[in-house]
Image (cartoon, one colour):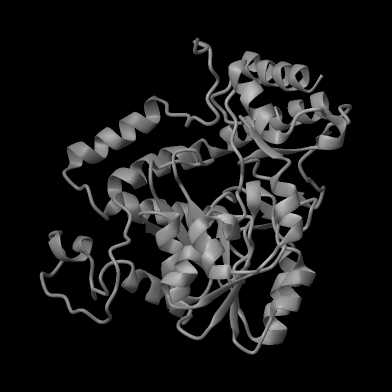
Length: 381
């Protein structure tokens, strides 16, 4: 029998201010990119300390757009991690480039910088670091590698809203950074994303290419101050954000500090509860960074258990706690296995067999948090 008190792995926090913002957009009659998108872009740029932010319909669109506008194309190689969602690699393929996988650091689960350096070839044109779970990659070393080899850096910060690296916000370090506002993320717009940059020329290109390559968008054409005339300056994409998404994004951004404080509180409680359990390796953290705690990923020390990871997940589920796994290494999916052939990333492959993402989101009550702790520890015992 299904447990009626099942705790979902992830839920967004939607409150009355979020609903009111979306309703206001619906009543305004302006549904596509317009004043609320412009306001959200400005507010988000200020939040991450970037000069420019361009609202998009997804993080995946941002990954493709960023690579294309950075000039990555056929014959180029792009180094990234095997421990990511497939869109990171797929968008490299979409621009005609070859993805190269650099194995991960077993503690942080981000790409090992030494492995990135070893993967650089004469064809390498860019690095795509992925800040998994909201813990930042070592950006000082990555940016130095990029400088020495003349490479572009497009940060995948799908998990990285609110992440800081040595006092700098993720979103203000690489050539460009892409964020996700998917329904389970720290800041949600349902579907949606943002790309940020400090490069004026790149920002102009990103904005142009995000909406068909038009010289002026609908907001510039259809308002009282606008002109109907436009020109197509490049074969762009249909990647722009809508005002409905932006309305939700604005209200979410206003309360992001409160939501993050709750995430940090839950992560702290988990850390305290699991610290003494030899079968659990806690997520990486460090005093010189700020973890966004998009995910709380534990690693099971299977030598201390008599069940494997998959059995653990099933037993936890039967006790009413949902979990997930982030991620199946990219090169283990059928299509990518054929594409990459004999490529191996032994650290990512070993870590994958042990990882479990526990529920962590602001909507969780203290009782929910204690339930997760109790079920995890009882299952291990």
